[in-house]
Length: 624
Image (cartoon, rainbow, N blue to C red; front, side, top):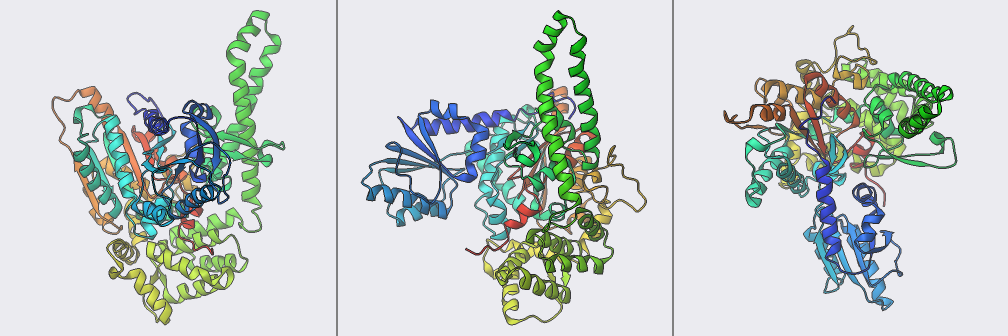
């Protein structure tokens, strides 16, 4: 990103979260043990260190597991997500203490807030009482970098888009209210999606309740764009080919941190490292197409070696200055360079030879590009059948199946039934529920033309029915939008998502956002962001938006003539893009590119960072 003047300092949000935690721990006087939900370990690690916790009276730290924790002191604090299975685990801990006649006080801090069902479970288990107190721990956004903030709440995707449970949308709305409390009311809001609309309404309600509305003259962010994940499922279903995207697909980036194993470090030890703009080497390569990474790393290695070598011919005073000023930085760069070269080699090995269960990336990319272009349909189906018969990684096979469905606006009944039968024979019949979940979310749909078996007919009626309840009734509208004839082709053509044949796409020196998919496709969400900023709203895009699921809305505040010209102009170039349901690293790279190209400063917010596999995991039925 260019000049960061007037760009919101998101470290403020980290400070707010630390204050919340300090206050909650401080209210529980004396020495205490901390038991942490495993899914919150890494996010809490980003907010605090062990020293911070020690200062707040924490003695020992445990990971929440099924086994009993009999040791420790007389006070215990649980920091957990508000989930039923976790409440049962905590109740089991407390009851085992009672049986052992161990007297303790307990405080359960629920992130980001408690739900009524959690209190019900604790009451049913007979542990709710004077010794057990429950509090909210309002940790909203965790800054992963200077331009990425995340709720780190992967459960939201499952709850909202699979179950139709809108409970978590309150957390999304609250996070926006907190952003506006820190950086001023955002004057221009554009949104697409059923949940985005609900969040927008909730923000208005919460703002009036908390009386936190600021003067529009004080704002640091000019635009807020709210997007539902189901507006664009195609993008996360495509293989990532930017460096950061590949790191996430192969090693899995958790809360902005990554574990590089012995195959990367070249030693017996693993190295945990933060991936952000503070790492000069990583900052240069994170958004590049993978083919452009090795060349940069090679030239940077030569530069660092040359800088090391120049010390041999230095006088004593120059050598002292070199050690004092340059050597530390060079060592850090050298360490980072070694890690990223190691990671690149693993990626190369993984993606060229493939693994027994993952397939060959070149074949997968060829099939994906054909699906996006709408060509060689039968060849694509044959490849997916091969994946099923060879029992490739189930999430890879599902990803290609869903991409086939999304790009063809639902499969013909014959193809759907054929692929489904083969999939169930290969991976297990419990995945009938997986297919039901994917249909309900609009990811894998069937064009209703042929006859159905009675069981499938009932399942399909359930997936399509408005009578299921208001919580999931919006699925019907999403499904209807997805099943409109050739919606993807229509939207692709109108928004130029697929570059025309013969268009040259230089992945080393890109001129278009499509480089994040090797020049084959511009992410739909990113094109919508570009168009809304260009048009200052959705005006003129009605013909495109009617093909997408959910509601379209916008709010623009009139510009005040008294507004300080410089401040207003700077803020108008700052845009917050909020993905409800998660964002991919491919989209982040494309939006950064768009910001540089159009002169905008882009701040990306999301409920979590996802990729194709993590998104589909939310819908897969697991045998318990």
